[in-house]
Length: 547
Ligand code: G6Q
Image (cartoon, rainbow, N blue to C red):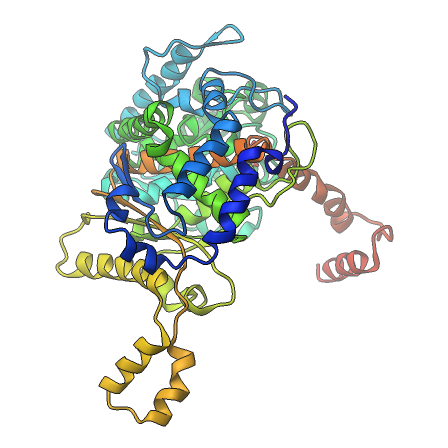
């Protein structure tokens, strides 16, 4: 398991020499010099199309990056993950979210468990349950059909299903409204309970561990609220659980008949493909959920078999690493030009930053270079009227991943062309920029005086040379969304392997789960504690006084 830090590798050092020239490249020149740049720097996979030509790379850069990945043994490590090796070393667990979307024919045995058989047994139960809810065979305690589904979960047990339910809004089943409660802040649950009726509401308590404080508190609140109308014996019709913890589910009072299990080899942020995706199946129907899994599986197949130079997750992972470690860019913006992908940046924040926001390698030694960039973003075109100013002319260069679908899911005239025009124009502007001479020519054409022109030139000049990727899909379908998420999962994997970190643990999150416990007792307890720093003591005192 001991491996050198990435910057000790010979291929890394070659890249350091290469970047000394690459830093001076202007992308607009690279395009002029090579008319073949677009066809050479585009890849198709699993229904997605990637144009990475608007990055500060040339063919040699890509070759050297692939050398680095080979020297690190990326392909062997990918195969080890798919084969079920205990890739998550600090928790001694396999990492098998890819098995959740594999066909029934998958042959994989982990510690005596026939993975495909177990996965498909749960998927079959999810299909049957979804059908019963939709057809009205599953009724609430007064005999009414379920109209509202409230998913109670946080982090990996919330972000995925919430993002996908919105992303696949166009495929929604009529008559079912979805709600997601995650925050321990009671305003979240309060606002939701005000919208639903206990007779027609189904709660899904989603927690891998079934111990997470926020989820348990929210689930108990929902239970008490329900019991103001229904009786204990009615609970099974209104509460189901998704978890790996059968005992915890029983102790909460949910019939294990109504529990949808998954396994410890599914990480929270990789779990939307498991029973954690039950809200998705309920929102859009099981067939669409199956298509979502199939889209991800198609990306898995590409990731496993495509040569590195045309392997979409590998190329994107390597270019991300180039931006971070060689060009020193410390942030990444995600810009989906599809309104229904509004939650996608938040989803990726967890996926990528929780996975690779680390500074030690698997063996505990320092990574030696910068790791995961800070990731943020929002939908286009809204972002253009907000923070894009900084992306164009701010002091930091921030790479952008544009994501768009060629066809719209609506028939409103004019909108789709306007949306795509903005998306492509922004990417072009980030790449080209605008020189002082170009600004002068424009302003002269507008008949401005020479004095006004010279005053405006510095303000209206754009440095350009700002990298971006463009990911296109035909249409935002279940299968395309599955492939898109799987793409980013594998990009995360590629970068994690290159840095040598364990992308599948989250000790920072675990810390958060215990930190608040003491202070919570102090907020509610009799005695005013004085054992913290003066700031924390002062804040606790103010909160107690406000009660
Ligand atoms: C994800 C993390 C974390 C987790 C939540 C919820 O990879 O581990 O975000 O999903 O803390 O945990 P439970 O599902 O156990 O409630």
